[in-house]
Image (cartoon, rainbow, N blue to C red; front, side):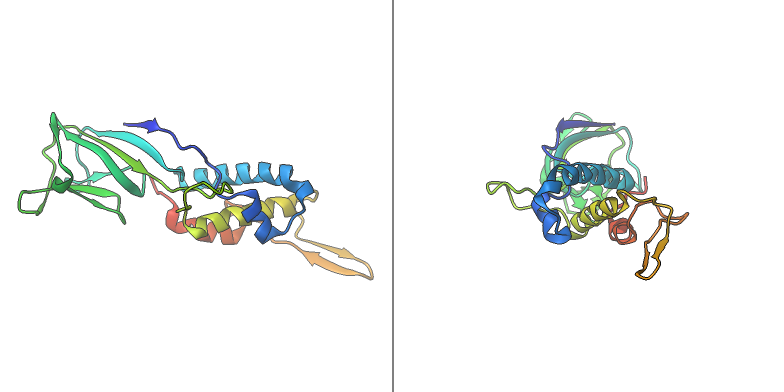
Length: 206
């Protein structure tokens, strides 16, 4: 069971100014592009099955999993506020977190990795990324660049789809030339193939 203790203050994976630097749209499009950024950010969060903004959450495990380890639902964990096993508060030196896998294991007094006791474990931790912001006083963003690029690519794809039939693959104008567009196939989920590829390492499978 997971409860959000402190919700993320933002959800958008890029900003107008950062998107403009890549897509080169006019200020008159700011409102429309802002809406597309909102939409692209939600689509990516759904596609990856995870929020990206930094939040503090409390997760309760009734029993360990994965050979006695705990698998956190949010990643990457950047700080642990409190870990309680049964009625005992577990000191930071008595557990280990693996960033790559999201697994938390108990450590013996000698530092060996051991299984949790089987009692319920409550883990309160901060996880996620600092998202991009145009505010000069904002902390430095930690969101991986591929994720932000995927968001901007998706915004660009949404803009290109505006005003035309998305099922049309090509259009020919007599005496002028022809234009071809990429159209999502049966196996495609997102409106941009590069965005879909960029996001693969950040998708949760459960």
